[in-house]
Image 1 (cartoon, rainbow, N blue to C red):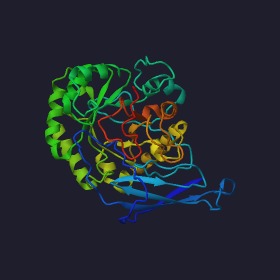
Image 2 (cartoon, rainbow, N blue to C red):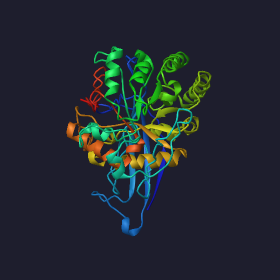
Image 3 (cartoon, rainbow, N blue to C red):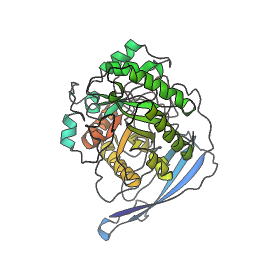
Image 4 (cartoon, rainbow, N blue to C red):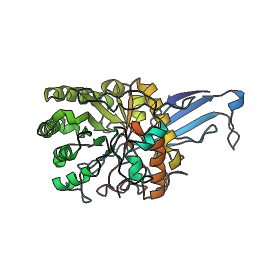
Length: 404
């Protein structure tokens, strides 16, 4: 079966009839307020070609042609779909092309060094990934728990903030990271709170840091802060897996793609002068990559945030297959290897769509599904609840923590 996506963008200023989705995973502590951006409506037409045996009709009699409405509010994509072929919709930060066969996940090499933090393609075995973490680290969590399934992944995100938004102490950060010894990668979004030093001092020799640079207006200063903390550590740059420049800058409407590309290239040069010769990427979403192919070329591999919850029509237990499709789509789009740099499921808040139901059991089901299908390809979001964030329109933004 052949699926072909034809996308047309029709920007207009619009009025929202209901509460908009304000996805805040891209937020960081320094962002007190989001800059209001004009609402944009994007119409995406998905044309499906099927043979006679696979032709499907919807309950209202439509044929195998699908029209998807995408609402871009405050720079965030929100999308609803009614599909006669399959129940599948992208997350608010995701637009992806469907493929005709079961997607082959794109796995991250567990042998990457700081000098070559490349991502390699391979097929992930569901049975093997469910029983061991990507790096072979010991998974001492109780089997069948959310922590256990998360530890089979490539890594986990961590924010060094207390519930009031102030920095945790070095001792608190060290204690947190020591609990994450089974995770091959620890993703930090910025080098503030002296977090790089604290994390590097607490990590095991088999772990590496996914180091983030979050603010464009202080990029050079933050690179120096990162470099100073890394060089002062025992392992130095050898403990770093990759350096990311920005988090959903294009998707959020904060910066244009051309400005992000320029920032990534500039950061790469500055980082090299500071001693880092490994991979440099920008982290964004599928629509950002689709609409701005230069993001593919400026990054050494495609780093993508993707959350099945925001699909609205994907059940937690189907999260793994959802992400398989994402991985295949981005791989085809960019021609590069792919790492999903955020994914998870909230435990509290309001329902989004028909199947985006927050809850502890739902999070467990989602993590189990993701672990079984694409464990080597994902960094789970996130270690603890982010109570320093605002709740968001659906009340879920604070409650993605796995270790709660």
